[in-house]
Length: 387
Image (cartoon, rainbow, N blue to C red; front, side, top):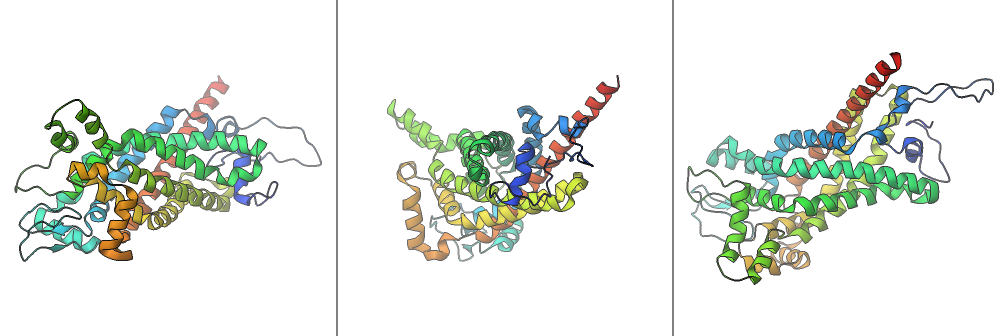
């Protein structure tokens, strides 16, 4: 079998594709069978050869992904809050603040100017715990979203690589791009209402001190209530659409993000794992995946920042009529007109600071858990074989 560290190419493919030609997995743990003296007879395959990443079920992958999502959501939520609030009006008196709105405010009113400024002002005005505003929504979103996204990516990538390697070898390097885009689209459409609630929970302040912020359900009810209070059957369709307000902007951001992220991450982590070859362990898997995820996530976040700014502005729009009329293109034009090119990259620092660690944590935890599950299966196979 071709090891991870193989530098050979096949029909002009990049060397990092060598790992995919063996088992179509993210990490190759199988060891090559040594032959000598021209002997081509095969030896008994190891347990690692009998059980690879391809053999893991969707449920096992989903559990791994859900655990990764919980860890990431808790650790990086303050950075997510900073990303959403950068450029938003802040007010020590507790007046509601919304991106793009111009509420009346006291002389103390100013804009959050960056990650550290958000941390300082939020902690001073609202307390440390408010840096974790929207964490419940983040968890509610992350568990099903990542639980769908990563397993689907694995499944799509494995099947696509198997097909392209047999039929269109030159297309194999583009498999991560396509698989990531497709998996992210499905996860995004499925879980979008919770994403909408999470963003609104992070961006809005309460008008009364001491009042507990609304949860996911109450936030979504607040989104649709202005339409429900109007009348008629026609409004039911509009209510449904409001729950997916900004979905186009979300897809316009997430699909390119996933395409850039996975097409960067795969070759980087396979190259890093290739440096250790057959000595792969949980520690090296963790390190290689976190490093690759950090690099890929940071690069993808910077490249898609304007689309994220447009998505955020659309999601926190208070006027239902305007929210339904807004498009990603129109929103980008408005941002460019109001703030110039700098406005398109509002919050790029917090966004990159969040995305790098987030992708690194999710991918590395996911792969380490899968690594442990593989070895658990191998252990039970070994015990069954001894009986």
